[in-house]
Each structure stands twice: as C-alpha cells, then as structure tokens.
Length: 100
Image (cartoon, rainbow, N blue to C red; front, side, top):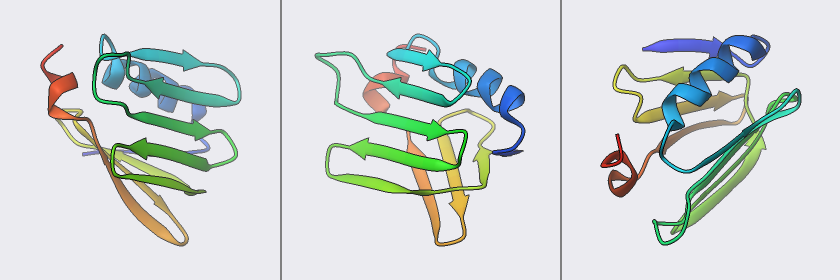
C-alpha cells in the first residue's frame, strides 16, 4: 500500500493520474485533482483539493470533509482517504475497472 501525504502534491498528482487513466475524465491543476466517470457509466466522482478538502460522490452516498493522508492499494482500485474525523474508502466501481 502506498501512502501519500496531501502535502506531497506532486506525487499525489502522479498517482491520481495513474489510478484513473482511461476510466473517465481527469482534471489536474495546482489546486485540485478531479475524476468523474463518463456517461453512460455508473456515475461517480472524486475531488481532492490541495487544502485537503475531499468531495466524493457514489451512486448511494456523498462525502464532503477534509483529509491529510491518502493510501492507495497495490491494484490501484481502492483509495483510502484519512483525516482527523474520517477514514473513507473510495472504491472504483467494477464497471469502470473493466476499462483497464
């Protein structure tokens, strides 16, 4: 499992791009990392701001909080987002993983 502090923005950008490559739309800039699936795929979105703000939307739930640490599993299918008040697992939907 790879651990990346939110303060290590450059490394986080590299891994974010690798994780979501060919799975939907990826937007990366100096302030945020954004992934969103493309229709007609299952609707999902993950946004990590450089400030640590996390926004995650899945078909049955949404999350809006702050994180300081990101853990990525070896298969790059699960992203653990950890902050002072949360430990959230973002799982890439299986339908999207078929695109790899």
